[in-house]
Amino acid sequence: MIHKISGTVIQGNRIGRTLRFPTANIALDDDIPVRDGVYAAEVRTEGKIWPAMVNIGTRPTVTDNGKRFAEAHLFGFDGDLYGRTITIFLLQYIRGERRFTGLDALNEQLQLDKQNILNLFNK
Image (cartoon, rainbow, N blue to C red; front, side, top):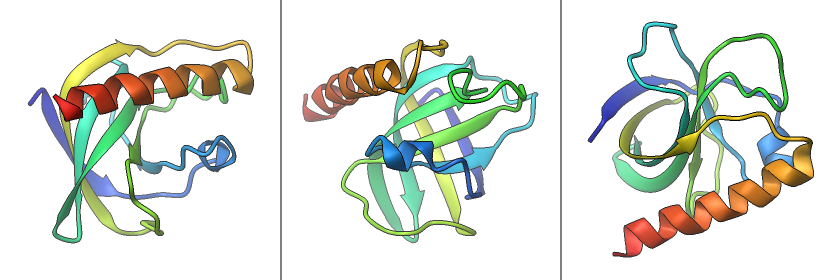
């Protein structure tokens, strides 16, 4: 495990939902000692652990406010986590965070990231 992050899920911009990658978002302090990027992870909530794809960073494709977030897409989860506490276990760094030319390009990369991370979990 690289790092553990716990926090209360807040409402985001709902862009992940429109891309079919809904995320549970946690605002991060600047002193969280992990580099920005995409991670294979596990997320614990309500006594259950879910495999997940997590982005740590400022979301440069969709905002310029510079605030850091952990955005977790839980594989197989269907529900509402707003206001609930989750714990994210970052397991493996996949790639750095970067700005994409638009949502279509971001979605293409998310599909690749998802497949790479699922392959890791299936090994």
